Image 1: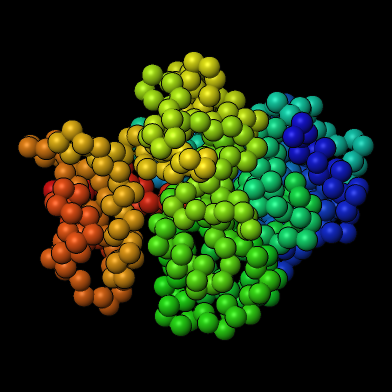
Image 2: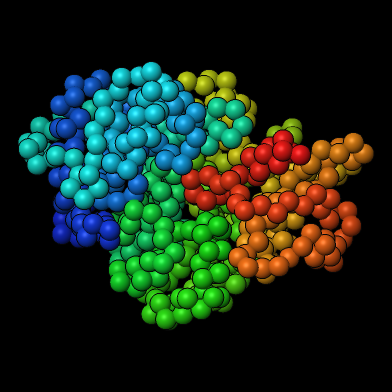
Length: 512
């Protein structure tokens, strides 16, 4: 899309002023497309009142909701650059993000005020902050609503819109610079893949400091002139009642949340709500690979298709998705390209043939401009002919569907043989005693590495290491069977709920 957020919001307010864009069930606030424009204009004038530099960098540290969407989209409307701060990241990473992005102003919700004070103390910075009440919001009423004279920066589709830092579990985070065109192309790709229409109602349960929450369930509804229901955060107890009450037609999830929903369903806690949720037409999964057994279980239990997809911060979310019914969906596959090009290469950057494993690379209007203040990382992220290197390993079958086999940095190399951790994980998730699992390479004098697994058991389940070994030997055979087993209470996760495999390995190897 060759547009900016200002031109899109202005057009939506003109063409569909009364249509509801956002519904916040926690505050009972609703935002029409006309409200979105008026809020954005007032927010633009609020930013101007701080006398910030042109295209200033404006951060937010807030849970989801009406006012968080206002801050995010208002910043983009004003032509400033938004810097979402991950509320569950380490203080080290947060402090780095604030300093690296040269943040000029920060909006913070009351519940994160103390965390922000600690971050600013860590950086030694004196950055102006605006505390936002999640019901009443910042004081916009006194600001002049003058759309003709809104003091916005002059931007284009190629102008920087967002600096979003990666998780930084290995080294420091990298700040992905996404343009207006990148973000809107990402939203358009979701609309293409999921056939979104103005009648759809998205349920946003992933945080707005993560690319999925931002693009998939905030920007894609904006692009399709549809509606988003946005509570503060995911709640298992209110999930189905909210779907039913607001007649949501779809939601985007991650495997961790899907597992919680399935456990709740199998415990018979959500039977009535699922029967009443006929408004849903599909669910969408991203962030990390969903085991095929989990996908099949969800579709059987809930009665709607689960559309598996894959995306990255650096690609404004989606690059691949399984097509919508009645087209073919393949469990275990992340699908086909929508709105961008994808291919698989070997270590000499040559394209490989069908069913050959290599690195997945992508190019398109959704791919980042660069990493902020990191020219070497920016150069290394692209092939010689300009394709972005995802770092994911996978193969393309004879029908063109792509299957992800793991991350290059996460491969287990046992006796010179490459083992995909996902291959192990998929088997572990078939065991009804296991809630979460992550396999990884453990140092070994004889083999270099052996297979290790960290598992979280379901509550009140008796399951021993011997039980797990017997299961794995039967399902995996001797070579792939884990040599090290760790029972843990929890696994570290990123902001979208994705299990951080390298962090699991680092922690458990260090403790042994």
